[in-house]
Image (cartoon, helix red, strand yellow):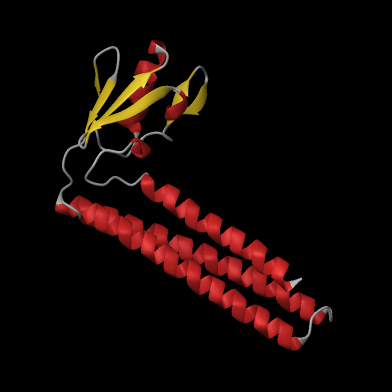
Amino acid sequence: MINDILRETETKMKKSVESLRQHLTTIRTGRASPALVEHMQVEAWGSAMPLNQLAGITTPDAKMIVIQPYDKTTLKAIEKAIQNSDLGINPSNDGIVIRLALPPLTEERRRNLTKQVKAHVEEGKVAVRNLRRDGGDQIKKLEREKQVSENDQRRGQEKLQELTDKYIREIEHVGAAKEAEVMEV
């Protein structure tokens, strides 16, 4: 029973780390990446849709993102969504594709982005700790209901703490890698 709780908790912790990784890809670094815009919501045909469902997104070089809509009628809506986003990039529209030229990041902007990364990393750690708490509560409940012994409960708590430490370290590693990427000139 404890092993089931540990397995379930570990699966959720893995998902938390993966969610953090996905979220960090949307934070701009010095080079162009389709991840910066692919999940941006665009008002098209009366509903909000992710950009990657409306257009092909490519990065021909490190400073340029090219967005080619599948349907030319969505060009203006895509351009408007980019202008309204917090990317701070002005799109250039030639009637066929939209080009986003990424300006170099200033030192101040890099520091702000690093703060964002740290905030997301902290949120990831909190999520893992909450999962530890929930798993620990489930293990304690088993002991209170006399389904496991006190020693088994203690061992389960120790294994749960080991899992938590492992995923906290992984989150810190992911965050440190993203911070280095952001600060890279």
